Image (cartoon, rainbow, N blue to C red):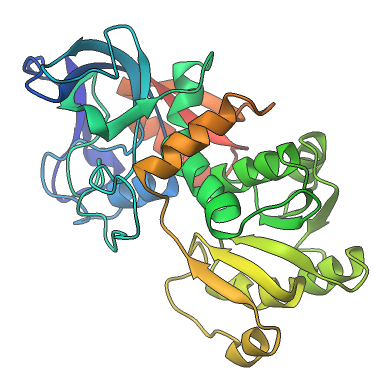
Length: 335
């Protein structure tokens, strides 16, 4: 089979396509999965592009979707032919014992899904949403599950809420679609008027060009009649958090899911306290969260936005396209 590995010291030029032995037959509690798709996330880009981030020979990619080829003894809830998708934290099945690092994440602390087949525990996957393509299904592992946890699990999204989403990355677009499908209103930001128009087409009630309106938090206050938004899906981090606090109503939930503007910075703690807002950091979610998410996707009128798909052998090119920032929504890999 084909697989992609990352040679030391890392960097996109060191992504190498190789031939490898087919995976072993599944043992007790295991399945063999024929992978058909993956999708790119900022996390995948960072661990591949930054020198020294991964050990020599690591197989990248956290997202993997495909078809069960064989099941081992004791596997009763999956059968050959079932369409499944990976989970981001295979060892976090449910409950509140949350991971605080990526040591168990495929494509980072362990080998990922940039390959044609793998044998793994049946508990490392869930069923894919019914009727979805493998590329569509691959987008739920990281981006989709993050949006679901931010809005539904942690923030308790309700119909009628106002949600702010920042930018046009995979999580932000998923959050927009989920919020609209569940009866919320959405205010979306971007620096591109063309992308703002596409956000309108996806259902955004209001859009703001944050370069033209740098005080976009105050603009969100104005658009909500001075009340403020109920939930902010905060992907920027230090350079955007102050505006998110301004945008939020008293008691708003700010889901910190990204640090695109840096890993550290000033937090206006007095404003956060005065408005009695909740700042919740999160990294994707548990397998149970994904099971709940898939169940919701089977009834919600939602399909992910896929910008472009690349072949597995073009993984480095796919990351360079991601690096350009030209994409809108998810970039996928067809295997």
